[in-house]
Length: 179
Image 1: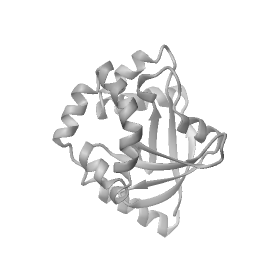
Image 2: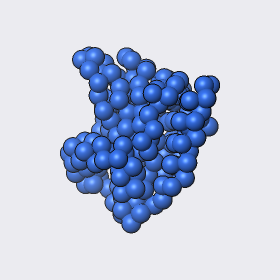
Image 3: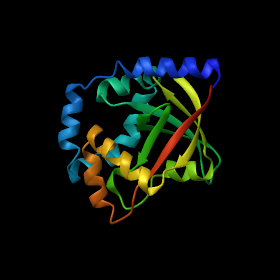
Image 4: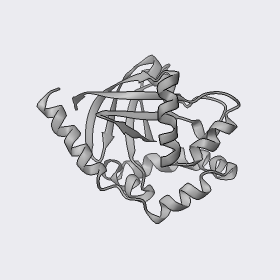
């Protein structure tokens, strides 16, 4: 690992240590488990979140929601164009884990197809941008990581119930270099 990448990961870790639950976090953890909220947010979130995520490189989004959030730029599976997705994430060592629940819909979100087609992506966390390589998690690791997502945001458990047996794709994003 290069010194530059290590320094970037250290800055991300320092930023992550500042993320605290907010009043909005408590509300989201409570109402996020309801079908009506998922349906409403499915329409609002993809419009609102990218706009809020652009403010201070996602720092405002993380402070508002009280969840670790990143901004991922992947390459469109069909278009080849850059696609921006604000996502909740977890850390496993130096790696980042993201899950594509699509708000409980019985389909995968587009960004997951993008990572399958083009595993190289760029993520920004707290103003620090790094390049990553994505790999789809296998069943065993998925079962290990998913409860952590439910602890972070209980709505994920309800998303599973509404997906009609379609397991959400989960990816490990391994840092490759600082951008």
